[in-house]
Length: 346
Image 1 (cartoon, rainbow, N blue to C red):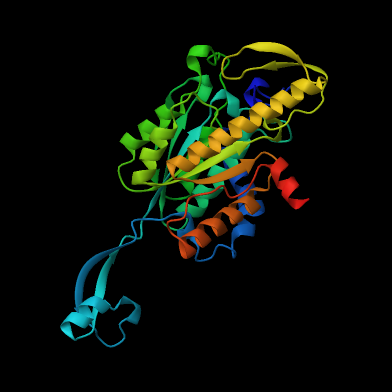
Image 2 (image 1 turned 90 degrees about the horizontal axis):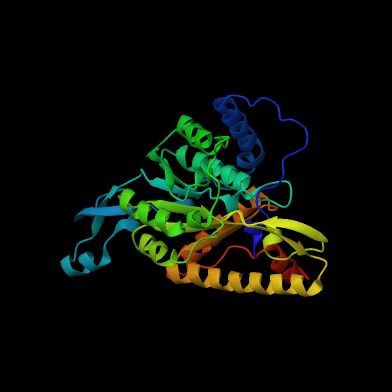
């Protein structure tokens, strides 16, 4: 009863041009994102890349007496009071951090009611964040779930650094569906919990983990998400399309469940049907938000009609304020769905 029912957006009637080599398409898209999105973020995120990634921090290596030119912020006042001599903490800093992207490419993500599909937003967000993180000397890795409609982890890209590695990740996500792509069926419904449990076994070092999905899945993902969050800094990036929240009057239209392949005709001119759709959508919204809150993760809601740079900036600002003012605060979404945001503005 949600966006997955509409399936994939219909392709243009004109025959598509022959695709460019994957590396050229990935390079062109990354250059475009660097110019249109990352250029706006530069200067606004200077010195704040650690806000995106909470690494292992500073490990205490030793204590020694205070010396001239030592940073007074490193004075250990408890030891100083006991020994009656100023002592400072000596740290071993772990500057290299790792970020992992758990990417849900199940059929329901291949939907968009406007100019972009959720899968395209996923690709752009992953490319921008991976480039922002990796160019500071950190490493990024990825686990891809649901490609070609198969309900399993399809690929694992080890954590590495550099622009070339980001291009390899983009090429992986831009792989076109083969003519013999697996057809969706009830047995192949998305099981997001499988991806999360696989990440718990594969990602050993404490990392920042971005779970990018529309969270249209079989039940049971909340517990593995919470277990993953106890070991890593987890961010749930939820992909949303406006049509998932409210159905306009479009007349009699065919809809298809992208997860199971089931098709049916519905009359969207029926006001009662649209109201039932909105009520069920609201119930699912409440259940999803409650599940994410129970898991203890930060949540970024990324709409197909949202500005990517503005969304990233709001997210960074939210995390920075929460850590500075109240590190133990309960995670909350960084933005409301568009329908609710417009109500707030009013």
